[in-house]
Image (cartoon, rainbow, N blue to C red):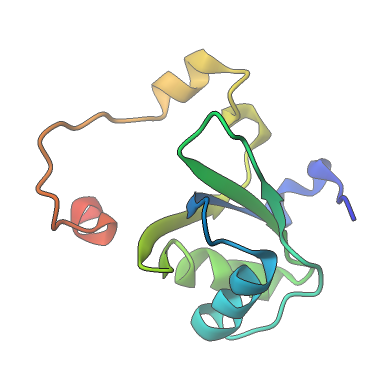
Length: 121
């Protein structure tokens, strides 16, 4: 079941999902455990075999649930791997390389034990 990408304010994009173990059922359970609600629609996993991780899009129909999901799901762990979730922005997909470059910071030599929330701090 596809959903309308024009509704971007209610779509959460999940990054860095482990290819070998991620399923829509696991993502739905993660939302229930971490954000505190069940999803109305199953997540859509984007499987790109050329990338080391998968991504997924999650449609959330309620604005308050969406706000809570943005806060609670910003960083998460699934099957022992760190992931992150951000509101969907069609302009930041691979087709707009200049905008992607303008919205990313590249850092080298980060200690392997450092987690994403610590880096953001």
